[in-house]
Image 1 (cartoon, rainbow, N blue to C red):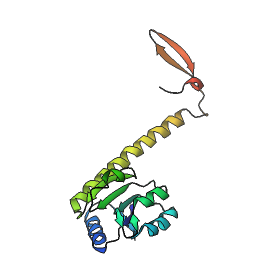
Image 2: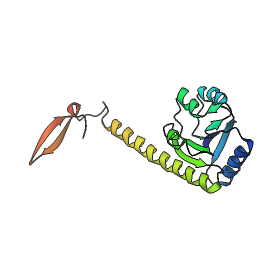
Image 3: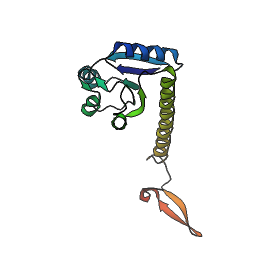
Image 4: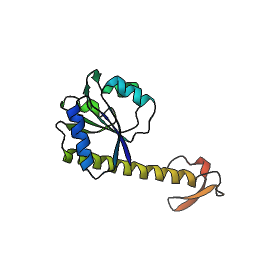
Length: 164
């Protein structure tokens, strides 16, 4: 289950997004809908576990970028707005996609597919790092490695190796 929030101040846009998300096969649970910068700051500062954020750029009390400037957000953001002028700024604030209103089911589906691919990619990287660090744990009995240099092999202490 993917936990999501929507930051949007227009009821019609919220309805369109939630309706499109309900028709898409991704298993998404909308935790809450926030309609202002201040409301979003309060909610996100309580450190909820959110997987993805759908956010408008221009809200009634300012730009949503104020949220991401004041609170460290690790969740990816799909920006949904009527203005294309904020596109470059959006990608500086965890943006993984930038959709123009009116948003369609197809647009959301493509954005969520991109989210799933990024999530899968980075989870594989984290798994590889975990395996690498567990391989070089203190419990291992080997403390040397043979490395080929030219035609000869030399023995190196594992503690002396920093990077391959």
